[in-house]
Amino acid sequence: MTTVFVSHPQSKLANYFGDRATAALRAIAQVRFNPTDTDLSSRELAELAQDCDAIISYRQTAGDEALFAALPRLKAFVRCAIDIRNIDLASASRHGVLVTQASAGFIPSVSEWIVGVMIDLGRHISASAEGYHAGRAVVPAMGRELRGSTLGVIGYGQISRYLCDVALALGMRIVVHDPYAETGRAEFEQVGLDALLARSDFVVCLAAATEATENMMSAKAFAAMQPHAFFINASRGNLVDEDALLAALDAGVIAGCAVDVGRAPDQMPSPRVAAHPRVIATPHIGGLTPPAVEHQAMETVSQLAEIFQGRAPKGAVNAAEAHRWRQAFGVRP
Image (cartoon, rainbow, N blue to C red; front, side, top):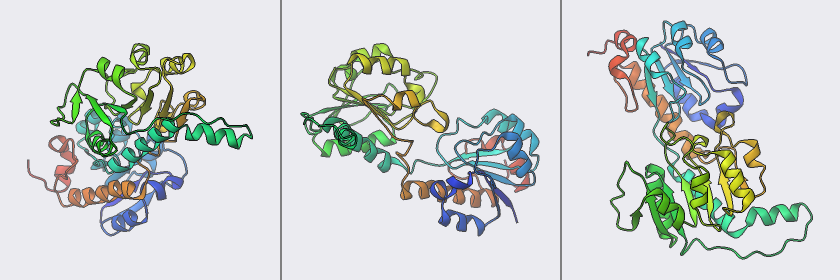
């Protein structure tokens, strides 16, 4: 029977993999788990997974040259998430290791988080609650309804498509910026980035993190926004120049901000951003709901079942180069 190593730290296993996926995995393989409550280094993982056929990778687990070189029996490195930037794909391919990624199971949950923080920012909910908790007199503040407000969405991927439909149902006007994708929807006006920033009451960043989008939300971008507008980042911290964001908040260039991601470890909001009084920060929980987590965990198990039967699953990213996997399971070119 094949052996699979699950790299999730012990305290993360329940929330980021779950009992149902664990039981399903045990039905198709011998399973070993990270015995610690820490993220494993490549050296530590190599020692623990020395005789394993596959690794299920937690989001902080690096798949690098040192790991693949140290594990000659490894056939698959299966990412229990959609983001595979922690994997050196060229190195995995050189060593013949199959790499897979899960599909996005968190589309509704992240969209709901965005709607939640838009309401929170527009109606001063967290700010009022914080004042009451501190024992201060809280002055009622005029709020902004989502209905009739303009939502500007940067990046038109799976989450954006879902979010735009929800926003439309709430009576929002919608403008979209994405130079690589067409909305195909008359209700969603497609505009350049500068126009989106100038017209939006809520700017939501959902673009992919790439070299081209690094620090796209710069001092110039924040200066283009309206003073009453709010910025929301549910993508990756790489897209935001944090010095520029903090300067814009301090100067009142924008009214406030909500972030679920940042440049801290594990894609968490940076403490200096999270501490700002005009920021609502959450610890990367946009996709942390049982349906979202179970979708990716169960898909990962299904991928392994396909892999062990010599079939490249949906989500395989280098099947043609994975010669070690192909040879072990008799996969024909």
